[in-house]
Image 1: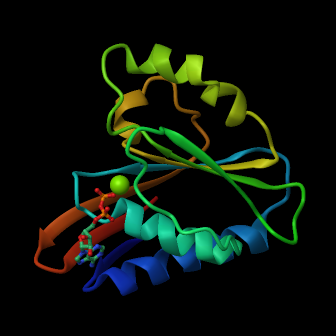
Image 2: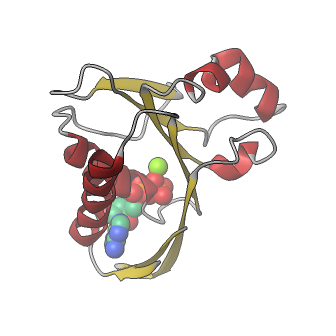
Length: 148
Ligand code: ADP
Ligand code: MG
């Protein structure tokens, strides 16, 4: 599905809608992985802010500067954890780094919802079963967001 948003608020609303649909459809059989791709400033973190709101997390989502991964609790559902991962600063053997971070164990666990910014950096090891979301800056406040 392809969307054009015209403000950060619209991108957040799309993130929230995506989380709302996930919560409705969740069956707990496998981890839920969301692979976000697109350039700096294309709206990935903004989308994640809305997504977190849809999950009911009260924590403010920011772009982690040095921390690659943050874990949030999903209130009202003690079986679910939400991980926000941002691989922007990951360099070198990114795939090996991600294994060392423990991410491959995290995304195997059916109790986890994992949203990964800069997923293009680990395309060879990311799980096959995932939702792919690409972001493109169309200038000013316009962003193209494709959810596959
Ligand atoms: P990324 O995580 O992809 O680097 P961010 O979400 O951190 O991107 O930043 C997007 C920037 O673009 C923010 O400064 C935001 O205010 C701005 N922006 C303008 N229009 C939009 C839009 N339609 N959707 C998302 N962000 C937008
Ligand atoms: Mg970001």
